Amino acid sequence: MTDRLTALGFSAGWRLVRMLPLPAARALFNAAADRAYKQNGPGTQRLRNNLRQVKPDISDLVVRDGLRSYARYWLEAFRLPSQSRQQALDGFSISPEHYDWLKGHVADGTGVVLALPHIGNWDAAAAWVVANGWQMITVAERLKPEALFQQFVEYRETLGMEVIPLTGGERPPLDVLGERLEQGFLVCLLGDRDLSRSGVEVSFFGGRTRMPAGPAILAIRTGAPLYAVDLSFTPTGTHAVLRRIVPATEGPLDQRVKATTQMLADGYAAGIAEHPQDWHMLQKLWL
Image (cartoon, rainbow, N blue to C red; front, side, top):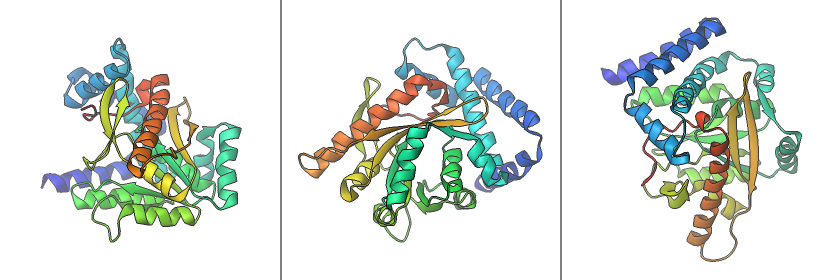
């Protein structure tokens, strides 16, 4: 019954939030974030601990702003399916140089690996990619209940991307992603939290954690360009910064994957340090 109610809750959210005027929706979601901050539950405490790992003397107001940023992500995610292509383009910004990098790779027919932490609005970034007419694929964590997982898959497919499951699919995800890179797809992967418990151990803000090896393996196997993507909220949308990662070329494969994943971790850290309030990490991360 609980699983069914969870799925119904998200389904209602996708429908009802789009019906509210934007100012009213923002006020509602900010109020929910402020309530979570005052209640100081496990998620809020974990976010506070994670942000203190980023910066030990960080103000507690950043924790409140972090919860508001997380609420903004959900608000915008619920409303994204009703946006037009032009709205997806207008609500996203990137420097001309970084845009030209992506445009050039697409024109050359080469795939691109875009790896990013849970920061800003990654769904808005995906909608922008698709609005540019570029092919994109991503991997989705298999949520419970299954109905909720299917809702998230359908939601992202509605935005125009291809979605494959992290587990339980017909083929291993890396095999499918490798093929899509050869077909010129942009492969977009969340890379700051390992869900397999067999990820690569890296140094991150002075501590040790594990991050998925997938982005590094794909780039090394295929030769596709690899970027660490930083996203942050602006008053009116989402802004992206790309950091080019050149994979390690010397040593055995496992050493190259480890070195490249560490480069990605350093790229993530650079962006998170600039706007920690937009990093939505409410789970345990460090070992």
